[in-house]
Length: 443
Picture 1 (cartoon, rainbow, N blue to C red):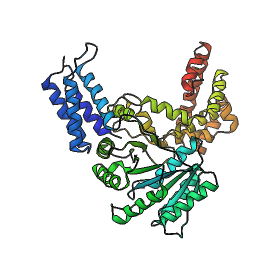
Picture 2: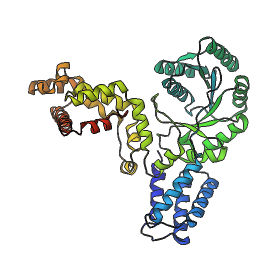
Picture 3: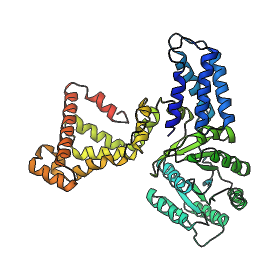
C-alpha cells in the first residue's frame, strides 16, 4: 500500500539532504518532486498543487533549528499537510437510533458486501447486537454471499429472496430488528457497473425511507481518480456521511485516499484490506500520513495485537514462561493469535523503516504452514516435552508433516534456543519486563 508514493517522496526529500538551510531554490526543487509524486499516485492535479503550495509556504516561513535538518523539517511539514488533506482527525460512525441503521452504497465490485460483513464483525466485537440486511435485489449471488459472511461472523442476515422491492425489504428488516432487540442494522444495497439513474433513484429512495444514522460510500481504492469522481456524483445525490476505502492491500497508487476527502468534503471512516473478516480498520489520517512517509504506524500495530490476543490466554502464557513450562502447544497458540492480526506484510510495514526494507519482498501469509504442519504431526506428549523427540520420532514427524528432517531439526533447535533465552531472562530477574513486552495487555 502506497509503496511507490512512499519511495518517490523519500527521493524528493533527498534533494535537501546535506543542505544547511532552506532556500527558495532548494525548496522549489523538492516541492516539484513532491507534486510529481502525488500526481503519479493519481492524486487530483488541483489537490496536489494546493497541498504542495501550502507545504512551500510553511517551509519558507520557518527557521530551521540547529537540532534538525531542512529535510527533517520538510518531512514534518509534509506529514502535517498530508494529515490535514485526509481529514485531520479520525471520525467515528454515528450509531444513534433504535435500531441504528447503516446504509452501504457504492458501485458493483467496490467491495460493499464484503465490507458489510466486516463492519458487522467489527461492531459485534464491540459488544453490539448487529443484523445484516440483503437489499441487493438484482444479483442473487449477493444475498448468498451476505448469508455466508453472516454465518462466518455469527451475525443474523435478514433476506427476502423473492421480494424485488428493496425499500419494502429494508423496512421489514428494521421491524424484525426492533422485535428481536438488534441495536444495529447494516443494509447492503445493489451496485452497478457505472453510475445510472435507476441505481441512484433506488439508493435515494432507500435513504429517504430509512433515514439512516449513517450512510457510507464504499470506494475501490485501486480505481484512483475514477473513485473520487464517482464519490462526487453519489454525494451530490445522497449527501453521505463518510467514505470507506477498500482493497488498500492491492497495487494501489493511493490517489483516492489522498484526494477524496478534499474533493467531497466527507471524512474517510474505514479502510479495508484483504478478505479476512478482521481486516477492517478505522481510518486515522495522521497514522496513514506517517505510513506514507515511511515512519510506520506502531499505534495501530499495538491495537491490532490487543484485539487479537486473548487476555486470559496471555496471563496463562506468562505463568508458563515464568515456570519454564512453555511448550509447542503454547507456541502453536501464539501462531494462531498472530495470524488473526491480518496480512503479514502490512503488519511489518507498520514498523518504522520496514516499509522500504520490504519493497519488492514477497511475504507469504502461508509461511507459517510448514511450522504448523510439523507441530501438528507431533503427539501431545511430544508437544509438551520436546526433549522426548529422538531420531525415529523426527522421521515420523517429517513424514507426517510432509517436511524434511532438516526442517524438523531446525524448528526444534530454534524452539530450544527460545526456551533457553526465556530461562536465562527469568534467572536474571528480567523475565517480568520481557514478559510484559510479549503480553500486549502489559500485565
